[in-house]
Image (cartoon, rainbow, N blue to C red; front, side):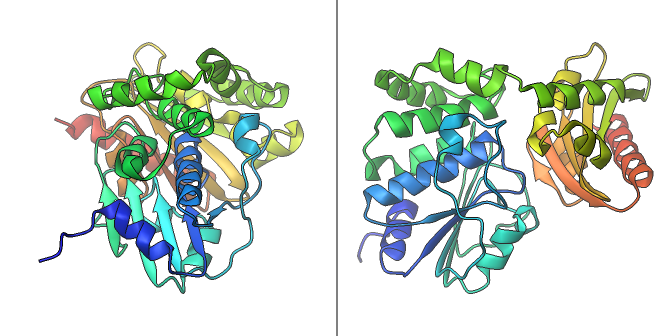
Length: 325
């Protein structure tokens, strides 16, 4: 009996025999979603396979220049092979991903999140892994040659999804990979400052408004900030400009769940959830609204009336705090 192909070999073999390949992360991609997608694109390129990374729009100024220079596609089209990275739920794909998935003959999911049964034909899901970048690295390591470009991409994604390598999702294998990455003189001090510490002036303005909107609920256990569509219009800030506020709020004394509500477009709300408290699982809150993520960091999307949406999320957060064992 011939030896069964592993996931990586199978993906490479299939993608080598199709006309076009799409790689797509989740809606409103973070650094891990972007970096795992770009890393896979480079790995496929090393194996003679061209692929498109799908995004709703070009990356804005709030992302590190190195990442913004990567080649992306913002127009939906039909693909024979579709690879979903850092996202196991179909409803978490951006519109361009859903539109481009329709005629795919082969579908793949590469992820590390908890969630429903995966929908793809082929799935590589390591629940609890530090990041999608680590899953991609470990899965494809025999099939690529590590270089400075890839080392930089992997480092950014892994740093982002581990909170600077301090979250409980960090394992010995994470540091084994890091040891391989830093051999390439990737200047990690510059990466951390440029990606995670420098705040653009417009982003500062939107975060200031978010701070001013903060209210506390459930005896201070829950902190909620809201950024309206009007706030973005008046400040000129980009959507990603307020992405750090939810992490800031989770560190306020007494806060067990921090919630940030972004009105991406009129009556469309992206909700980010964070916790720094052991025993609290914000993924349960997200999955109640068909969102997803991790125990410590999750997200969801709601539409309709702002007050009703915020009230519903707070109510669910209260339920989880009172019933989480």
